[in-house]
Length: 403
Image (cartoon, rainbow, N blue to C red; front, side, top):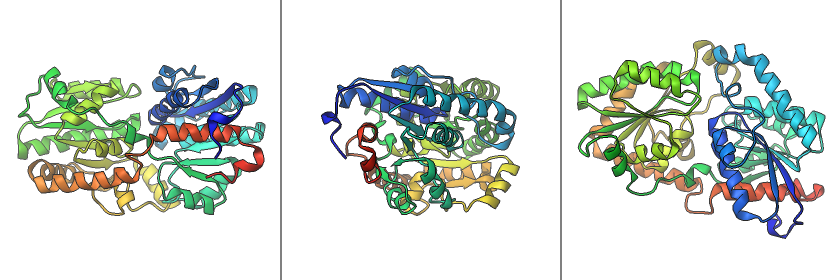
């Protein structure tokens, strides 16, 4: 790729589209990275949430309609979701950005990309955080090559996979590796929330989607109660996000008043640092916990109908936790669907809380995986931002050969 500092210094228009909180966080990091690596005027348009807005994006709409998962949640919202797809794609038609980047949330963002490709074929389209088609639906990569011009990969083994299917790709590293908390923030977190140093602290993370909280909250609650029968009382902290905060607070209040529900992202990392163990929904948060060197147990459930359809349509990967996928072994205890029971989750939590060797083995394994994701190298958000700038300015005949 060419050095973005040597391109013409005319203004660039970059469109970023995120569909849920995790993608919004990534988009916010990219916008901040643009400011740090180029003096060229960059206008950012598109769709995002609080992180992208804080970084300077005026979002076309919020994420409430698009941050859904599972048939029960998606089906009633289909008309609104499709309207949002049209609105986002029509923005690209009007603005004609130098490049449009679809961030994660493939059920939403890929629909936007396909509509843009149809209505404004000259707009360069990039996928950031590709769906794990290498694990479940490899033929989908060939379809992606019909409407995306490039993929920015979080995992090193994704590059040859996508290129094999005709889609140029660049490994930029996983953005989670640049979110590490400052050392010692856990001490002040405990003090600020009245949790003594001797008290065992469990971080409970039931997900960022309404459907995740619905299916996991009661299971996680029972798992914690069963664990306490073996280990004694635990302090419980529940980091959450705005999309589900009200639901989480209501559920926590009904359970026990002493639960600490927090929404601030800095407090979340402080809670990780302060904690002894975590019980988490599968997702980006499990990688964040690995970065924080926190032992964890991962669980996940969707509706029975959604699970049955998924099993019929997809070849499911051997693991759902990224650490396990990278290491190709079950370093992190994970339980999916029927196996996600209070008994299974509690058994592993008790082991992590009472067995130092089990804790240490998981921390070491997490360190291996985090290093493979780019920890210690240039920040992934900077690498991603630089790649976007260079793809946006590359001559048409060159961009397909860049990786």
